[in-house]
Image 1 (cartoon, protein in one colour):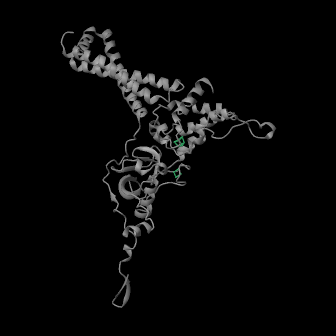
Image 2: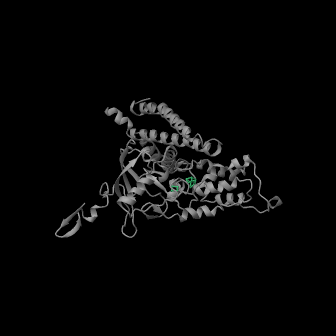
Length: 253
Length: 156
Ligand code: SF4
Ligand code: FES
């Protein structure tokens, strides 16, 4: 009898499993602190939660003064690159359950750019080197019939990988050369130069190759592959840099 | 729930308990690593670190080596004195370190050349790193026992 009652009662959704994760954040408020310091937070998380959700929970429920950048929350805008357990990752693409939650999760700002507050750095030096490689189509001629510039799928595929960059700075701020020499253009600028250097429609590749042949250009790259490991878009950054090196030595191919 | 207390309506709970409590009061850690954590790079980064360290070490060895060989022109006696001091066991162990450093620097140098000049070099860099380590261990396995015998086995 009681069984029948059970069967007819509406199904209660199974309770979603939760777990507690400890986050240790590197905090810094330029108005109050002389030095950055580490602060612990415990948050209850679900298997579908990302590091960004944990940061939101902390900001909304525990400490409203926590500062970090984010916009799209889906790995498109490139706002929330940060160092998670010592590796550059997007907070919105890193699931907490994929990290080792038996240990605290260390989160800090990306390295090598001036720290402004908590997880926010000044991106200006990064964007300056991006601008310096002329990241736009340079064409001296008017296209035939005044219409579009044609490109075959094979020509398009040549630089497909480097079109995916979202300028998150995860690569540049993972580079040991960039940490010690802020003048180095950095992987992201080279990736975006590569995107136009190997574009068949572009006529300014020699200009860019000359810029990157600089002392602070591609030759600073020491092939540590930190950038390739860090890129959230899976761009083969070191390979793109190697191709630009080859293009400088042997001409574009 | 509202209770009547001395003629006025008062919420049973004081207002600051109405919001849900944070799970734990945020506590400030003692600055364990105030300078930030070590970047967790992978094989590529560590091969670069080792390449740099061995490179600098070999540079200083060469500097000293040029000085001691040039001694022979100034005074052959002091040259002989310096060279005989190299025959001590400490220097023998130093030679092992030197061979290890040069071996690693040379093998990894070949890997870097392949990364830069071989079209699929960047793809296989991790595999090449382990090949470098493997060859290096083979090299040391061939050299170290003989050298140890040489140092500690007396005449050889
Ligand atoms: S190349 Fe990758 S890691 Fe570097 S800025 Fe672009 S998306 Fe970010
Ligand atoms: S918030 Fe846009 S990439 Fe993470």
